[in-house]
Image 1 (spheres, rainbow, N blue to C red):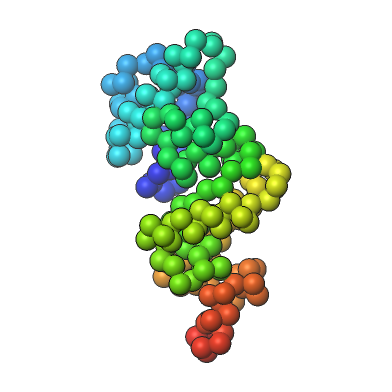
Image 2 (image 1 turned 90 degrees about the vertical axis):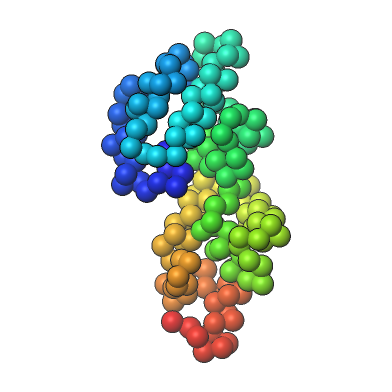
Length: 187
């Protein structure tokens, strides 16, 4: 629900959705029309259809206790799950060691370590994912905290409009912040 949608818009929908479809199996058993009805107003209806397909796929495995997989590779095999979502689910839901890169994380990591790369370019994305993997702590619990910190720093401090280097705890080790200090453009 959070793909391309702000948390403030999702909160009420999420609670109602979980009340209506409390398990993967109840979601899979529901007609897709009911899922779309519960999603109405959030937009991007392909997300709802993919979520229904995902639930159907997981439930079709024959195990009545089947759950969403924790492994990012297994997650990527499910409908509607891309690299970021696989990493986020694995890290946040299961506390597994899994990198994740969204727009904010890519911008943050590239500014910190490789500012010559454009975050939206194919090469920039490759470099961002490699950096996400290389900087990820070894344990899942620490990776969870690390990933959450990257998301928050990229969304609130190292923003697309303004890099608030003076407020960033990573500024002393950041290539971009050093370049700004050297050029006199520090905030």
